[in-house]
Image 1 (cartoon, rainbow, N blue to C red):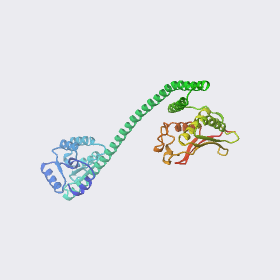
Image 2 (image 1 turned 45 degrees about the vertical axis):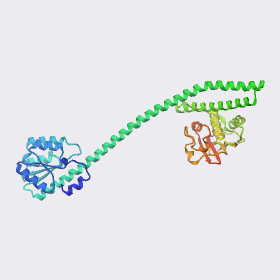
Image 3 (image 1 turned 60 degrees about the horizontal axis):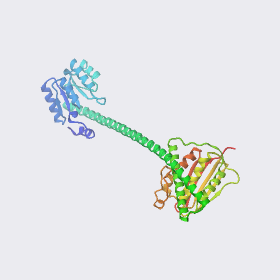
Image 4 (image 1 turned 90 degrees about the vertical axis):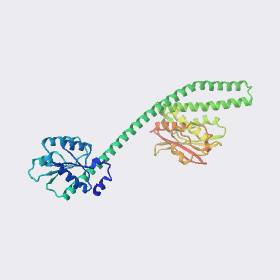
Amino acid sequence: MDESVNDVTSTSTCSLNEQRILLLMPTGKDARLSQAFLAEAGLACAVCSGIADLCAGLDAGAGVLMVTEETLTAEGMRQLRAALARQPAWSDVPIIVLTNGDANSIIAAYALENLGNVLLLDRPVHIATLVSTVRTALRARMRQYQIREYLLEREQDALERERLYAAEQRARAQAEIALRTRDEFLSIAAHELKTPLTTLMGNIDLIQRRARREGGLSERDTRAIGVATQQARRLKQMIDSLLDLSRLELGQLSIEPAPLDLGRMARRVVDEVQPGLLHHNISCHTPETAVMIDGDEVRLEQVLQNLLQNAVRYSPNGGRIDVIVAADEGASVASLHVRDHGIGIAADALAQLFERFYRVPDTAIEHIHGVGIGLYVVKEIVTLHGGTVNVASEAGVGSTFTVNLPLRPI
């Protein structure tokens, strides 16, 4: 095939059949001469024995059809139209009709109107004109193949997107089932653990009170009971966190807001927590006047307790913890700050700190216990109150957690 056509075929994928010229001439001699002229110009041809053979060749693939006017009988025209109708939507195969030079030819007019992409050449035709016309038609056909490839690529892309979407939907459904199973397990496990733990803590408390009343426990036994009490409380906190997580995942965690003095609540929680701390001192700063909000007292106590536990956990060497309550009347915001002077948190971990099950990846704090639920629960409770929580921290200096809540309208 000549180089001008190769320039187009180099960017499209088509078979040799799809590049050939199908010839239908009135005599074998005419067909052989035409084939020889086109072959000399580098154009591959196939001679057809009749209209049925031409249509079969078109079904198999062709670049250009070249027929003479006298081969287009009524039956031949019908068969050719049927073959063209079987072509795909992108196909508009060029048809070169060699006419007898009659300007009023009914056959030529019918071909132009009904066969689509028809080019008329009056005979006798100069060889150079014939070759040029065939090359032009073949280049147009090659561009159609490029369109076919583009459409196929789009179709394949669409199928791939559908496949990926279906796979994503299946994976999402499986993940949702797994999450529901996990949440149900956590809820059941937490409830099942809470009953024996309550009994255990009750009996430990009973032993402690009996020992205080009757005496008789050695220092080692007293210390052992203290450790058991501390670990039981820690286990209770973990179970409560798991229950809260389960309620959050199921959309069952709710709040019951009521008028609440945030400063008074903070002082009471600090007074309850401080006696259990041996190496930490909590300093509570609140305004002289009440800082009134609409809040669920039980849930906000939980927020402060979790933040205090976090401050203690990240201050392994002990030290001061500051709890500060403030009110910004202009912004209608009440603030609760919990500041420790411990090991701090790396800057690259702060953005994920309130995500569930997140643990700071730091070898320096591997000994610190926790399952990564407490701060997630804090954020969700504060959000339910229409507030925000954020953290400022510096490694080796300490961290400050700030909870902002709407002030109660006066």
